[in-house]
Image (tube, rainbow, N blue to C red; front, side, top):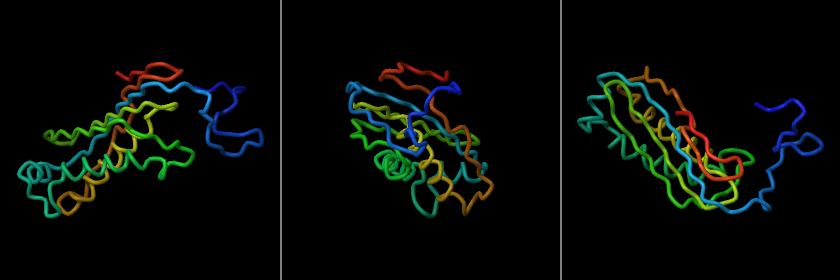
Length: 160
């Protein structure tokens, strides 16, 4: 929570949006993990399991989409810094009624990689929706959240 008297970092003295100046922050190892869920029908789960999706392998394509999204987060989210990612990994697990997406990123930088993993998980979920909608238009995407992060001046965070 932000204290009402605390100045927001993305606003300048005229209350205009600005990119935060991180030049004085130390370069440290940063890691973040995010998750998302795509709730699917049993028919779509079977099609994914049997690799019967007309557009191709849904999990492999979603993994690549998530990786691409993480690398381009600064182009999608205003005021987000460009980061040289050291690694990005997208894990997709098909369960009975959903696909669990976990995105993990690492960077050696002055700012964290939380937005990169959240973007990766979101775009992977949207890719599953796009590729599976011919079979299941009732899919829902839920639970997009940061699970944990480490590094930086604010220290570690864990939702679990």
